Image (tube, protein in one colour):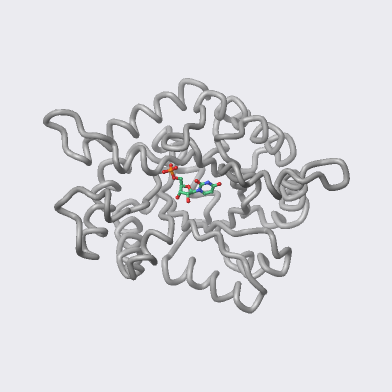
Length: 271
Ligand SMILES: O=c1ccn([C@@H]2O[C@H](COP(=O)(O)O)[C@@H](O)[C@H]2O)c(=O)[nH]1
């Protein structure tokens, strides 16, 4: 099943637009998982088990694995998700961008090595840098209006009367999405821009990081990004779920589940 079909199925099966981020920071892991690469695997799979019926996707950020030389654990986590929850897409957040020959290797890394259903890519190097991803029947999620404040340095530059990020949205909608496999990254910290991007791209899925630890407003995000079908979004939360402070008598996985459930409820209240 291709990415968009799988995402549609996961939205429906779990009645959820919540994407759970997998960013295992060794310093923040519960003590029983610290110090060994296998601990990363056990922590992430415990989070997956605790939230799989509440999520429309899981999004590991590759830096958290590569920094520790733990890419093998990411391969294991991806295989675990595929085997146990084959209906939930895996989004590899790697934000790659390079010349075509190198991009071909990055595409193999994402789709073949990690078995990702979709991967995040940077549009900065243009069409030939994203074409190799399009050759796979998987998802390509293009950075458009990122959640960080510094994203404005370039993404807000006015070009031909409109901000650069809107040109990216238009380019993806008009050209790069000819096979219907694209989505865009737009930060929850910028609801007005989510609204502007939605107006350009119709019902194309949006990956929306920035709620939770980055403080984005869930209600404003959902109102700005929802489609007529009440879907169209993968609203990502990583640290707020992974490192939810356990209440008395509650373990980390139960705390993660509680926060994921609360987040999904708030999202669904405004769909
Ligand atoms: O614009 C962007 C693009 C990607 N991210 C990534 O999403 C998560 C957010 O983590 P939180 O803990 O929920 O803040 C992280 O992996 C980022 O690399 C983003 O934040 N903004």
